[in-house]
Image (cartoon, rainbow, N blue to C red; front, side):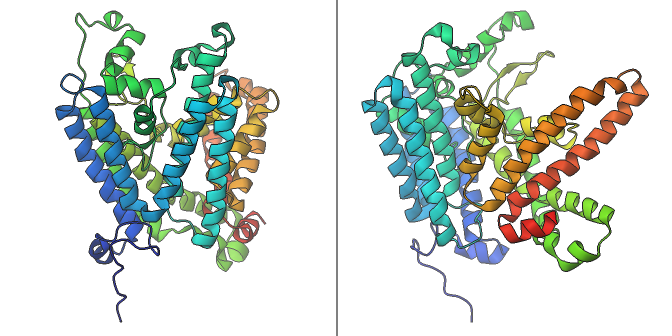
Length: 453
């Protein structure tokens, strides 16, 4: 017998079930259907937001309110009762923002946000057993945690530190006035980024809402020196179309490649005990490649939504082209052609790497690389696979750095040697990343140990 469709909202589900017929028809889990539906609706809402609620016609308060209300609706639609966790954390941390002393505001916000996120990560093991839903409530909670802590540190920089003690980037992003409740809610819960991110800086977001975002970025790159005789008005349409094409291709790869090469193949008896070593290496690479399209899809679509609203302009490149990659979370070409572990990591989940640098790497006095990897693992969750990946990542990073410093100079004497070096380092980098990231997608201890053996 066919299962009864769930009621419109249920404690057994993670959101609205009005799209349940589409879920059955497509054979795709309901939570993923809800996620894609919300992001597509957000895309159309973003175009409308840019055209009809643009800063020239609408006050910042109205733009803040619209972005917040739609964001809250999307969260409830996707995650149902679990969305309460986001609202509780946001309100708790706004209380800290208002009441805490400036010297401690970043510490309290960091420990409360990370502590609450960790408690929710632990509870998910019991809620969802030993699996992981690609669109469960922890995703938005992780993004909100990034934004809460980023803003807290930037407020501390602006109000609690001397300008001469700040780096150039910290000085540029320092927030000198605490945000109002509406600004705080809009920054954390706006419909453009609440579902899939990315994290962004408070000053950039406020400049976007107030209509200063593009002008501010053009002034930073000195647009007159780029050959423009008057202040240009760049349109994001071309960038959005380009990113939607990447999104569509990623979706097709997800529906084909990912389903045909599931990560469970890595712990099959044939793979572990019978396959030749080189076969195992190649198969590991293929399986890990097949696990990427879902990230390419979600992050590129989220970037396109922000661009459609007019947010994400980063300036003008050396050829005079307008760039809309301020919020981009990945550079696919540089990932797939990376010839070093560092290059790969710098172009994967870029905004999370920026957050880790902002709240940890630049601020801790001891072992910044080690502590940054540990914070990254803790932020991702409490599944053992995360810790295998990030602790292995520490060793691989240090090893890659040592090899580059000691060996690279011997291959720079001719173009042929440099090509050989690039090919070898590309292959080693891709296999090292596959080896390091495999536990991340397998999650549990047993399959990880089986693979590593």
